[in-house]
Image 1 (cartoon, rainbow, N blue to C red):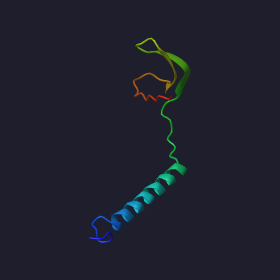
Image 2: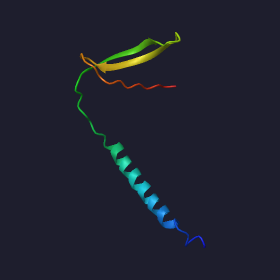
Image 3: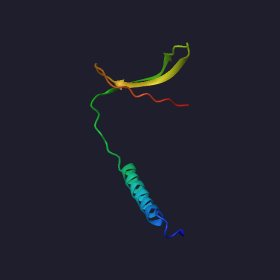
Image 4: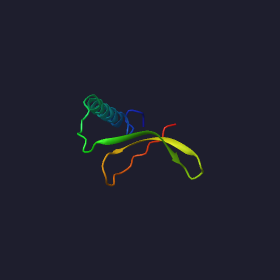
Length: 80
């Protein structure tokens, strides 16, 4: 069996290439036209807050949270 008649040859590769191009094109359009969402709450920003860890180390963190009472989900991002 030569390379051109082997199952799973050129056609699936061409399809995947076209699919990847379509996805990348859609992603680029989304990035150039961001969706703006109105804020539901005002926010309070506290910079360089020292947060103690269990081992005694203190990490510096920027806290950005709603300026209202209530429980809200937390998003934690570690930068190195």
